[in-house]
Image (tube, rainbow, N blue to C red; front, side):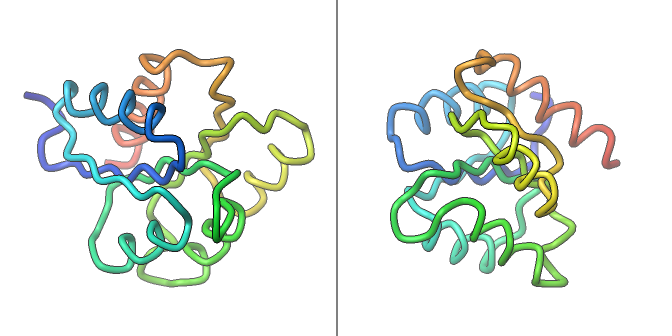
Length: 128
């Protein structure tokens, strides 16, 4: 299987969406962890090294923008590519996400899971 040894963290509060991406990523050979809110996501990323993070914005306890800010403040974490995966499609939200350091901003309703996986594959390939 390709992509073995690559780990992905999905921080997403909707279990259905999370499950869709877990299945898709695992079928591509990725090892996948999930967190259902920003606080849990931050705890996981501080304990384990991930190759990429898929991050929702609208979540309980700690929103994705705050999670991204905190990831980027930690020298050992700030090199991990973060892709925002959300339904927020306003220009100012997109700009904010990219300004905070996301490598890409994907609006869920405009991309199929397969297109999202292609984006993940490309980002990880380009980082080698």
